[in-house]
Every structure is written in structure tokens, then in C-alpha cells.
Length: 124
Image (cartoon, rainbow, N blue to C red):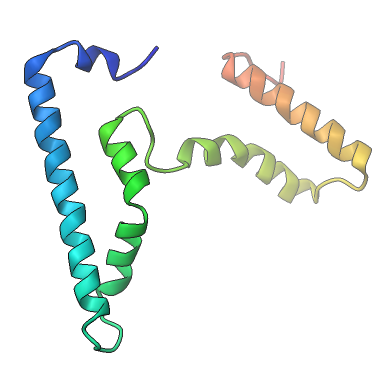
């Protein structure tokens, strides 16, 4: 199910706000690009604001995707949280010593996470 779908059904008022928001986001990024170009062509030594502006301009496509499609996360927190138990396990046990052990650990961690996502107690 598309999480943005209920908002899209609201019709014209929502579309007007969405269009206005999109034009403001576009204007914001264009202003940031102009400012960055002015800083880079100024001939001055590295300005403190140049790095953040460069970062913003380079990440424009991803940021616009997250702003225009609210269900798209702006960060990787969910993926990082899903990997955290495996990383902690590896740190506590010093990993595995063979390819077969690594395969078995991967299988066990996969089963554990599947049970956890199904709201089952993996330790029962």
C-alpha cells in the first residue's frame, strides 16, 4: 500500500499546496546553487559556508525525493537498526573462524530476525 495515497485523494487543495511546496523547494535549491557558484568564483580562500552548500547541492536529488514522497526515508536508520543485532553479536563473539561458521551464523541471525519481525520470541 502506498502511504502517500490517502493524501493524494484529497484533490485540488492538496495538489495546490504540493505544487507550491515544490516550487519553493526548487527556488531554495536554485538559490543554494547560485550562492555556491558565487563563493567558488569569488577567489577568496575557503569560506566556512562553502562545504555545507556543496553538500546540499550534491544531495539535491535525494533530498527532493524525500521531500516530495514522504514515505521515502531521508536516512538509513531503519536499515542500520536491522543490522545492529548482527554487528553486536559479531563483536561479542569475535565473529566466526570458518566459512561454514559464517554461513551458520548468517542463517541463525536470519531466523532470529524473521521471528522477531513476526512478533515471535526467538528465544523460546
